[in-house]
Image 1 (cartoon, rainbow, N blue to C red):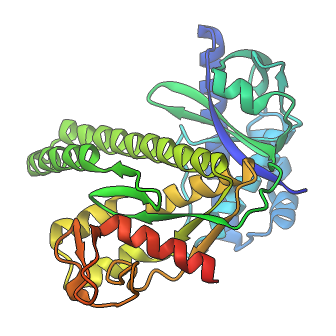
Image 2 (image 1 turned 180 degrees about the vertical axis):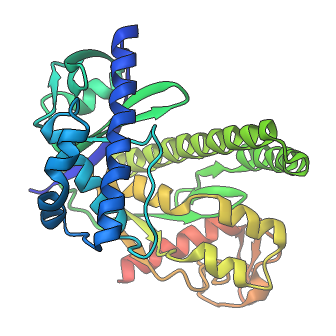
Length: 360
């Protein structure tokens, strides 16, 4: 059975001398990346093997405090960057991520991590929560790990392999409608309201407008802080909603049915029938992230996920099947012009999603 790869973010708790060693290592690593980038760009060489043959020894001599494996990881980082665009010379910030592999990183239980630095190997304590214990216990690191520096704090991004849960064999379906007023609504009538997040986003939008009008460095700093806070908030809400949905599907032995909403943000922004404020909220909410969270949590718990055509799910009557745009009276109200069926519009859509999953 194939495992699931997840990335977990772990806060490091280095002592002062360890903190400085990590900072110097990060700066030298990215300085090496910039030197390698110049060589790659000027020689038009973007193959990892060829670039390593071309610049390994000169870079090793110039950055003698970096271990040989860190130099190799720097070359690999540069090659990855040029995969996106070979026409523009890549530049790396001095506090950019260091890419570690299993030769220069090893976990010492669940309390410490051993990292290669310019000062040699150091063993750094980690802050491990209950969640980290549950996902890291008896797991192995897959591929690479990134050391990142965020707001003066070092974090380790570890990719772990989690086994899939035993797949549920069932014909029951839990339909999920994703929306704006309600971020998610299921076919059993539970609503995951977006009122709180939408109110906060309106307030943040007003603050952004004020800060953007100032144009000072302090204002730009505040804008970045607000953006990070907004992303963290959305991520946390998506985690909570996806967890509740998967646990419910598991309790009721149900398949999760979702609309295939690929490209929803782009399509909705182009639509003239969607209000400007609604388009803004659609473009800012991470439906794709929510879908990803539902998918991987479902796989961990053996819950199947299926996708259905989203066309007219909000206009179709779940009782008689009649489809008409007049059925959707308001954002919240659905009333079929054919059979008179009345329901919450999002709940009606979730029933349609459920039915389409059963039919398919």
